Image 1 (cartoon, rainbow, N blue to C red):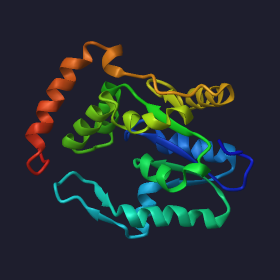
Image 2 (image 1 turned 45 degrees about the vertical axis):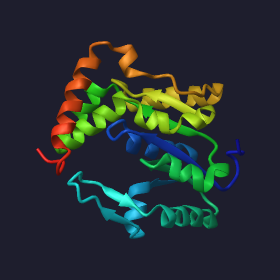
Image 3 (image 1 turned 90 degrees about the vertical axis):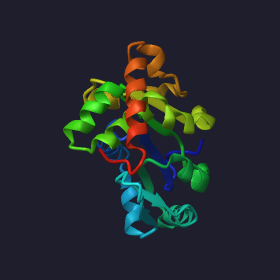
Length: 207
């Protein structure tokens, strides 16, 4: 782990959409006095993405160009807090400059409701709720679990989440432990229904 007193380091804030990455990332960047950056907006600004024509309301990133954009950030000699859906991309590019990774988790049913309240399309809501329930992002980070601080944001206010985060950081409580399907047996049948919905949406991914 690098020294966070260094002038150049990148802290990743990772999680399924709706888990609180933007708010917690902004609060953390203020606390650490680092620049806050939205990875998706960075890639859009650099024009290295193209629309996903399946109708999934998302973008496809040019991986090689993204690696170069990320590495170029190091030339600014600044620290960053980066909200991202692409943790393995950032890790591949600048792993030695990442002191720790924050993985935010939210119960899939609450996540579903949050995204619905935001007005997201039903297929995207279901896709992300399933991703959280089946640990998609957590599994992507499993190889680097020794540097992952996992924080449950379910029914937590931002101050409480930040307290948990800094306690985990101070005690260096790393690892990936949350498994929603094991914690909540009733969730299994709901996820099964969601998977049927996803299969129905797959041709064009529209309602």
